[in-house]
Length: 386
Image 1: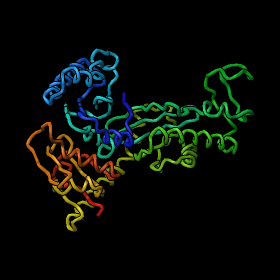
Image 2: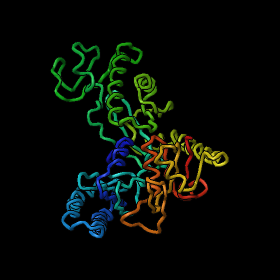
Image 3: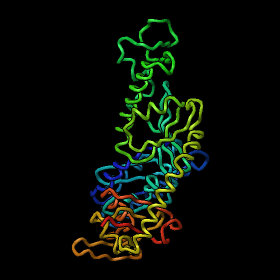
Image 4: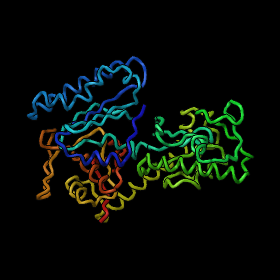
């Protein structure tokens, strides 16, 4: 189970400024006996979060009210049987955002003046997040995937079959159809199976093109201007028609040939990953090359005292930050001074999260990487625009 989270939505969360903002991360399990331990783990984290709020001066009833949207999940058996690999809870007095995501988060609680989003960022860059669009005339599905995981995305109002998309548009249908009942019977809600007059028939191709334009329009609206690669899966004659219909700017030219109706999600994922893997490796390595070149020309830095002011000014084109680590400190906007601290307090924040958040808000690229994959193995690095 995966709760879809777009980059545009992530930016909205970053801009939330209703203090205090509570960010809770924890690993979860898709199956097995450990699913019974996950609500216990969350209960312990909520107890710790409440203590942090009270230590910051909040009244116990007020703290409990903020945490209530998470608390009510503790006894929901079905919820815990339908998990992904990680759970993130972003809570404040006005809103609650709870997402099941395909990342095995480490346990983390942060109370700050904004939501802590850095653990989510590998979904958007370094972990190779991408989409798989499985196409046939009778079935359309969208999968969200990373290197290790794949989950189906609910298509909501997106048409998922040609029958659904075109039935009510065509007063005089030029395609033969059957619904398992006698000819001439009114549409009963069951899906029609399209036969047409062969793939070379112009009318049939036009119908497919109209159908795919409907699909593409709905997917673009659903993804909210997302910038991740999308791999098509479909028989060879359908893929170029969808390429013609699509306005999604990150549709990968090469697709997976075959009928997706007879392939499992795991089989689709395995074949699609081989297509996008070089794309992710190339983009990240290219960004690292820019960083190393920039160090010699003062257009890059790994000094956190230099990177933080550049982030808030919107001067970072590419930022690298470590996941699983924090660098606590305070940034004074009045004089651009930075104070580094050894541990979290009620007055400071994770400056690595601050760098990542500000870079995203100014439309820069962020690579959230394990320390061993960071350029120069430093906590933060950046390439400047000017």
